[in-house]
Length: 422
Image 1 (tube, one colour):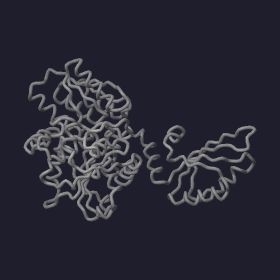
Image 2 (cartoon, rainbow, N blue to C red):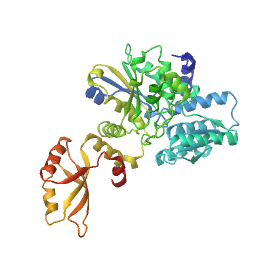
Image 3 (cartoon, one colour):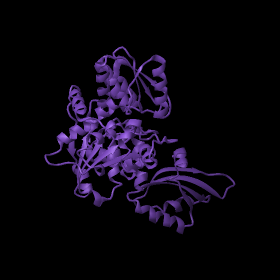
Image 4 (cartoon, rainbow, N blue to C red):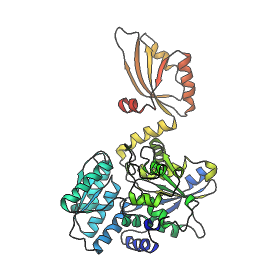
């Protein structure tokens, strides 16, 4: 590793001592449900239990304490964030009694906007600009130049990486004596957390002990590692808003560029929804999409490779807007294959609908039905959503469709059509 980009143990330990002013170490919990599922010892580092429900407060606080020590108290502090960094920033502004301006994408969940206001109080103002983080970040940078402000980056700064590395320092102290992780799973957005943690642990764990998790729709680290230089993605899927970054940070990439591209798992957004619903239903743990990213990555691994190992997953955040829950449930069911949408071509004759209903199995349930009967037409179209208890049930249903000569199209995985009419 290039030690110029690595955080130093003494600096991380100083940051850890300082952050104790704000909160106690977040728990490192052995999760019985996941351990049984993967036949391993799976620990969760619960960064969703910080005062702002994400690890981001660590880096923001470390940045501010160093800025205060350097006498930067008369500046306007500025940040750009999809939500979690904004909350850490707002918390730090209020703690140190300084003014701050928060730039957030227009698409930021309302829950994160409201919480940012609550944490910052009268010390911060919020500006909603751009559809994705990168557009918002450019607007924040322009504002810094306009007012001669002080930018607090979300990930691309040594003080931020140093603050995030305190997560690793806590993990080492919290693991049972004599135990080190065989696998440490790190969620990746801009790279500040993963760069800080891997740098701090570079002399303690071999490189192959690290596994990185990125959303499939925002693979900035994976693509950059494949090319050997930083790649700016032309577009990103914003669903995993806490990790939907089009360009990994310059300093984080310098710390991560020696890892193999295959160590970055690209997790489908709908698979993340499965993890969110599982953790909510079985464990009562509320996770945002980015917070579920590391756990979801385990499901993409070979079970034999995980068997018997000590695994630590970083649960990076729990700032979830429950208005999104129906969409999360919908995505999870589609990913598991227990919910599908079809467009059916049904003959316009008496009894045709009854004949179709007779094709359904005993565990098939209609969740959506729209029928447009047109005059002077032999056939009409139906949009139908069907839920069932097992994905195998659809195999039999489709066979019955074909035996009956029913015209149909499965549009479940057609994102354009699905987003338009579902």
